[in-house]
Image (cartoon, rainbow, N blue to C red; front, top):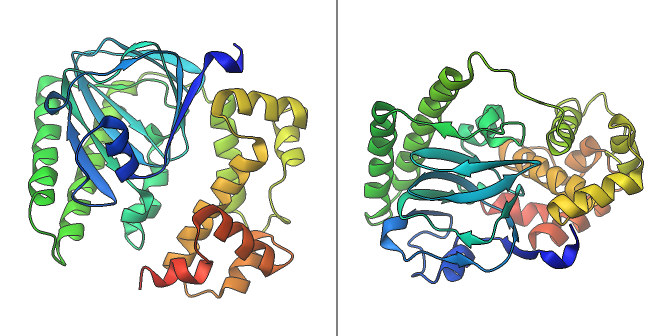
Amino acid sequence: MSKQEFSEVHIRSITQQHQLLGIAKPKHPLISLLRFEDHPGREIEQRTRLISDLYQITLKKDCPCKMQYGQTSYDFDEGIMSFFSPKQVSILEKGNYVPRSGWTLAIHPDFFRTYPLDKKLNSYGFFDYAMNEALLLSNEEQDSIEGIIKQVENEMNLPIDKFSQDIIISNINLLLSYTNRYYNRQFITRKHNNNELLSRIEDLLKSHFQNIATEKGLPTVACLASELNLSPNYLSDCLKQLTGQTTQQIIHEKLIEHAKVILTTTQLSVNEIAYSLGFEYPQSFSKLFKAKTKRSPLEFRQSFN
């Protein structure tokens, strides 16, 4: 499909998401809960590539939405939950977008920084491209999920104090634990197709960063393409079509996210972090980090102290 047939929307913040939906500013800059029945339905005028920098957990009801997620298409119908992690790409088909009922919980990754849940999120397969199927809830399961979301909503409506974030994150942790149980129930007899291109790339980069001590240097486009048995140019062309990003841009995004975890969970100096990530010169790491986040590594670390 030609590039001209797509429009593209890149959501970088909770505030921007609210602006695009035409609703009031969020009460908290890093987290938002929207109930679809409180907002009018919206129409997508043309096929749209949606890129979001947020985690999103959604329960949709009464929504004949069609969406391409990764390289697989599926429907969002009655009582279905779906999960998206930052930088993942969805293709919204022309037509209805906002369902008549349900909710979406949007969370900026910085909301989790310094909390154990930040690392734990990577262990949940339902945030990966490899998970092609949404979660179908029984009535009992839906009641459990709704109860937890109500607790999150109640806390978000209270004035913010020093306990607010702890309580909200505790409830999100509980929500994801229940979700993990329900997914295991749903897919216990099914085998997942882990050979999709985007899923394979995520796996390779995750493995690289988990074994950073034994890896030599930064992950490269050439090495990634070789692992996938593709030429570098062909890989970048595929990714550009699917995600709007080149292979190098995707590598940089994953690199910066990994660097953020190290900055907020260790006392390593910026130079030590740069070398551990494979940079030959620490200045190159700092320059890339600032270009991607608008803050230096030290400024980012200090914002959590």
